[in-house]
Length: 269
Length: 265
Image (tube, rainbow over all chains, first blue to last red; front, side):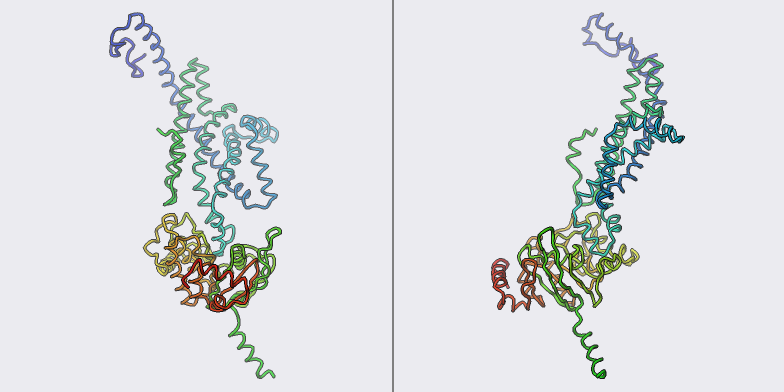
């Protein structure tokens, strides 16, 4: 069994125990405990392809939700900064609403509540993307709003002085700068969304957590499977934030510093 | 009767029509009157210098002229046509013809020098990118920055930034330029290069209204000095008259103080 995973056989004399000074009893105890390890690893190995297919589902949900959140969040932020006061108020209520209710409540509300009440036939997968996207749009609008507000007022003035319409000034001058400034915020949003996406398991979306749970409850290998699920999430988070950091570096305006504080505070293997 | 009237009217039209006419501009922020009815006629090729203490309304007046700040009252004519700034199309067309230079440059930070100069021509005038690019290079050459055209604002010195912003305004073929303390944010040693560009513009007949504290520069170049205080134009006249023989006591006081500070007239 042990050899199948490429693990050193429990009876091989390769690992020295306390330079050979340990008692026979201790040695037996050590190997005895280790003997279960290969089994756990086998459980992980067997379930891994299944879990990794789940990570694909997770990634699609997260990327879809982020994209939806961006598409909704940018106009929301624009409206909140430049809009009429009634529009600003409406957007503030929207943000307040989607930030104030737990994800699980929203998922159930949409999937079991709204979809049933309105007789809409949507898959759990689609509902997951929509709900996560709507919630994310509220958060992303605030990331983006902060970015717009941090731009000097003179940028808009200079654009207007050239004869640009407000819409042109915003799309050509403000938007490209604000989007750049939003990248660190997105990195944060991505890692939160990724972890939140595990909750969609409650609807039966076949993502990482749902699959790990499915296998664990049938094989009774809870420890290795949930551990594996955790590791996959950790790696996905790391990969995402790492690539967004590269993106930030890539779109950085020459002459401007990168965000050193962020780099110093985050652990980056 | 008609025999002499017609030529006389023609004459008046040709000689006395100011290129920019500002009438009775007022602006109030809350309870504070920042501008209390300022009027100004600017002829083609004029360089009007606005002087006065901080808070006199110089900057607000300049920004009211191209409606970056909406005046509460007042009318503006450019080349004999009144500007109806409530009509967006009219406003945008008018702003193209009025170049604005800001104290803190306001270059577009995400664009390099060339793109900064080009963007107005491409986005506002709808010129093809290549043609606009050629023109942009020409304008940058004119302000002596052809070698720096690939640099981003953050990589340029203050003086260079201000020269790029002048090139950006010039590329739009403005009829009038408004300069709001163009050298106030610069290190003393960088002021000269910007002054040289402005002097060059003046010599080439550009019509300009400039707010500044650089009295020496102003008096050597200005066609008229306009002294403002407390939202009003108190006195105006040739540099010689304002600096040496001002009628108003406040003008004399301000001029003597500022001459002490910025010296070398």
